[in-house]
Image (tube, rainbow, N blue to C red; front, side, top):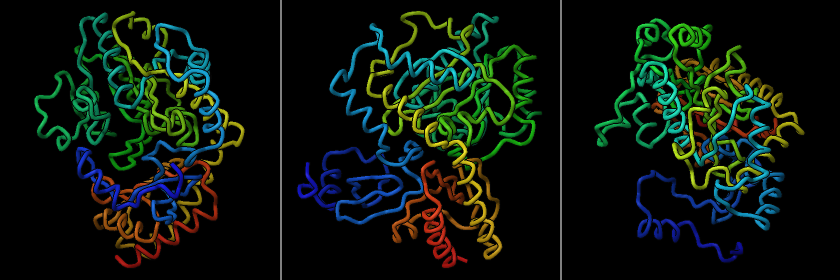
Length: 402
């Protein structure tokens, strides 16, 4: 479809009203094109995007290496089932192993799918360790919308209307080692935690927290499972967030940024645990498809060629300077500032959705979570002048609410 043939936003919105289930709250804008940290709507308006793809577009919109890899692959193989070997899948699994803890990969299509696989594997291992099945998860965590992943999500607001939940989950507060100590009994197969809670408000682990969980799991015979769906693939300035804390997980999941915006998820597991998944025990029809695998390899190449892990740290520092200056100007409006790499959360004294709406009017895209938390997940390719431009818009908006 050419640009001239693109219907306006109003026509597309009307079409959705007739034919698409309204299970999403959507902004009244139809996006038609993206490049880097910009997107354009059907009327040709340009927006600066500080929350590209809900965290999926880690390299910005349409990163060139990813685009070219997909263009090449689509003319060779689009999809083949996992009853065959695929070169790109093996190459991507190796690339992830070499940049993490050397585990083995199971590929799927999303973070929820990856977490479902992790839950099943953890219970398969637990069954061999005396019939353990309980999985301990953290309050304000988020693990997905499928049933086991939703049951693992210790936020009752997401459970309402879908009860009963899948049994076998035990909830404790995040950053509370004493509560975890009490919860990890002889029936616990695993502890599942986001190293940094994303949807929960960009909540960072307290010093020693993840290390303490690792020690508790080792002493109690439980697996330590990390949900790095949002934190993985360089988002925090390292390939995976756990690498900031000197620990190694038993199982890890990643999705969102894994393939540069293409749907993809992965579970990485230590080989001794991965061996518990036998043929027929778990599968994903489209998991590990050639398009996603080539895209993932292009993501790795882009990050390394352009030294984007270091870039994440510089982006964090620049945003911090802007928000700390705003905090000084508006101390009654801006509270805690939490950031690691390009995961940025700012506590506000008002409903953050008001800020999101006001920013969108000025064509800056940001996000609100947990009511009063302003959340940014900018691309690793975001340039300094665009950080300054976007933060200038934020300053103007926040001044209105101060």
